[in-house]
Amino acid sequence: MGVLEGKVVLVTGGGNGIGRECALIAAREGAKVVVNDLGGSLTGGDEGSAGPAETVANEIIAAGGQAAFNTESVTSLKAVEHMVQQALDTFGGLHGVINPAGILRDGMFHKMTEENWDAVINVHLRGTYNVCRATIEHFRNQEDGAYVLYTSTSGIIGNIGQTNYGAAKMGIAGLSRIIAMEGAAKNIRCNCLAPVAWTRMTQSVPVRDEASAARRQQMAESIRADQPARFSVALLADAARNVTGQIFGSSGENIILYSQPRPIQTESKAEGWTIETILSEALPAMQDKFYSLARLPLPPTPTASTPAPAAAS
Image (cartoon, rainbow, N blue to C red; front, side, top):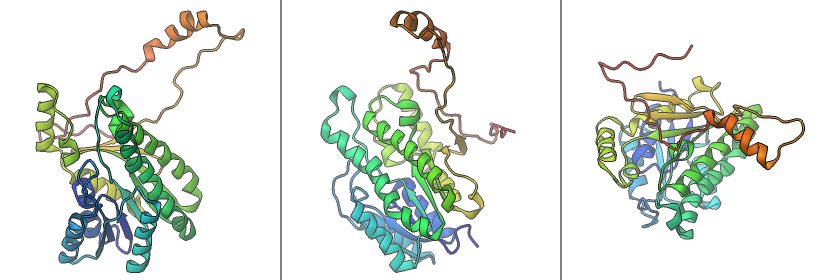
C-alpha cells in the first residue's frame, strides 16, 4: 500500500522532466493522478499538444494505476479551475498539488524584453497563483490539502541571465510561506522545492566556459528527475503532516533545507542616522556579514566512498 493510497493529486507540467516523474511516482504510491501539460516547447510555444500529458496518463493506466490528462495552461485561472473540476468529476476528490510547470526565456537583464519578462512571470508566478487560488477553497472546505510548489536556486541564490525566472521563483517562495501560515488552521500544508535535475530545462541553460560544461556533464551523470520527484511525493504523504512552510532543495541524493531571510544584525543610533554616519558607521559595521555575489556550489552527490553529511541534531 503506497503513501498516497486513496488520494487524488494534480501534477502540472506532468508531461516531461520532473513533472512526469512526479506523476508516475505518485501513481505508484496509490494516488489517482490528473496529469496536466500544455504540450508546448520549453519557451512556451506549440500550445495544445495532448501528446506528453496523454502519454504519461496512459503509462500510469497501463501499469494498473488511475490517471486522466489535461492540456490546458496554468496561466489561465479558468483553465486551472477546469483541472480541479476534472479531478472532482473523474476521481471524486482532490488532496494534493505538485506544480513544476514552467518555461525559460533567459537573457541578461539589460537585454530583457517585456515579452520575455511577462511570459516567464505569467507561467511561474501567475501560474502558481492560479493553481493555488483554484484549489485553496476546496482544501479549506475539506480541511485537508497539501501543495508542493517549485522555487529555484536562481531566485534563492541568484543566477546570471535569469532575472525573470529568478524573480518569479523568489515570489513563489514568499507565496508558499504565506499560504502555509494562513492554511495551518485548516490543515493545509504548503512547501516549496528548489530542484536540481538533468531535464530539458537544465539543458537549455547556455554553456559559457569549461567549468560550466564540466558541471553539466556531472549533472547528466548523477542528477536525475526522479530524485526531486520522490521528495515531492513524500511531502504529500500523511506522514509529513507536520512539515509546512519550508523551502527545500533536492540535488541528486542530497535533500537540502534552506534558510529563510531573517534579520541578522541591527545598528541603532539614538540621535538618528545621517547620511554621513550611515556611510561611516552603519554600513561598515555590517560589512563582514554581507553576502558575496559568488554563486556557491551545492553539496556533492553522495557516493559509496563519499557518505552523506550527518543529519543535524
